[in-house]
Length: 152
Image (cartoon, rainbow, N blue to C red; front, side, top):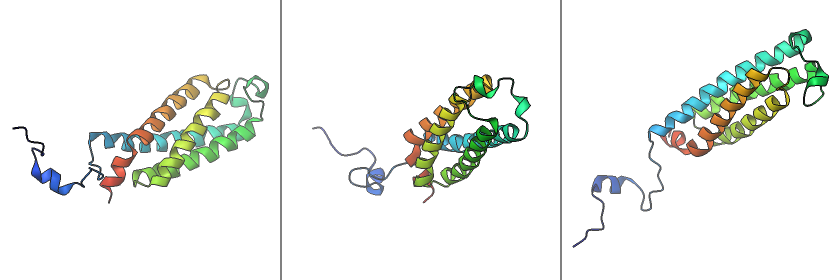
């Protein structure tokens, strides 16, 4: 007759009845990738912010050419604060903190929106940051629970 049990009894004994305990797969590497990309994007956001604060003449487009007409000093502080927060959340994601994952998704979304508004001043870099932010959001939302279960 047909057997409905598992072919690996050792696996059935170690996991919960309904498989609630998540097993770490190779996809947990996405979270390490997301964490390091948050470090990298946060660092570059902070550098971009410092450049906007201290050297308004660096950008070819004036404030009136941006999507949102705001002084470059204000954009600089937005990028600087966002960069520092991304670096801190990247460290939290690397430790498997659930709150850091949620805040990381929010900050990556805000970073993408800020770079969309800043795209007139530095188009190539803004597009690169937006793409990396989307990858970070994907990694944090789809594969987030795997790193947390491995750090217990």
